[in-house]
Length: 426
Image (cartoon, rainbow, N blue to C red):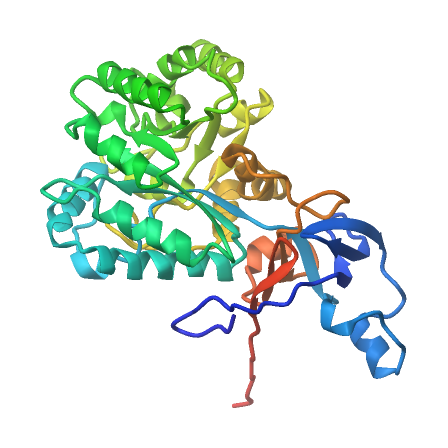
């Protein structure tokens, strides 16, 4: 995929069998063999790369199936566990006032009357391909059930985009159901192909009632849930604990994810310990969303502004599956964002005080675990969803976020970005 303004998926991306001279986060240089979309062998790198071998006239098994990664750091590909592709890149259309979550919701709902299926699809496709170019090979997107006479415009648009990108990206969809949307509309969204039930019970007049309604629908349909949970700086709003108790006996075939969980970062230690224990017992996956929550939370705290993140350290230390995502990109909920997991990882280091290894795990292996995807990485048996980024180590990769990247999905090269730089004397 060329780095152009209008990125399009490449239909004939190379199916790779050999990666040579790649650097791993532990400093090893390795050659990697792939077969049927998985990693089969990882060995110490040969003395010369494929490219140099060809230059010297040395025969290689099949250079068309090989990729020289000398100078690149090889990582498991990121996954985006919480996006809003239906909202992405709408900032310029709406020109909303900057502000907190309430203002963002109001701006979006007012603008939603003007949305069309085609318009949503264009922005969603752009957002998905931006993620892919930066290394993300799987995305879970919430999609609003809209107010008015055509509530499924966003669903129809994202189902279309999912089908169009099926060869290059895994896309999961969550129906974001407002409290005043009838059950039959949510059922119709599921019939159209949405994978999970979603909503924001904590923003409703009766949080417990709405939570239980959404869980009942999911149970009736035999699907999982991914809920916006406690996205506010209020220690008394803790629907996460009720969610955990309610789904404790759910089967693994009905996965449960809670996104945001901002209030959990504000509670007393005993409440935190009790709630985290309930999350562990119920096998709930947690998704933290630093860029959007750092932007939306704390507007009414001009002094000692809270960071607006969940209790990431406590959750990780307890063994909870924790993923991290970018959430909104250039819409009323976040005017910025690069659609880049390395941006999310950087914010986890600076705002959540994670190590670089923990931060990258959250946007890759942790995110994939929350999404129920097979593990990807550079070890035999792993799915060959991989990101190669020009960097010497993980700290450099996250700090510089070089645009020079190769992206593999199931062993197939689906994106390549190269940068040309010229420096001039005065």
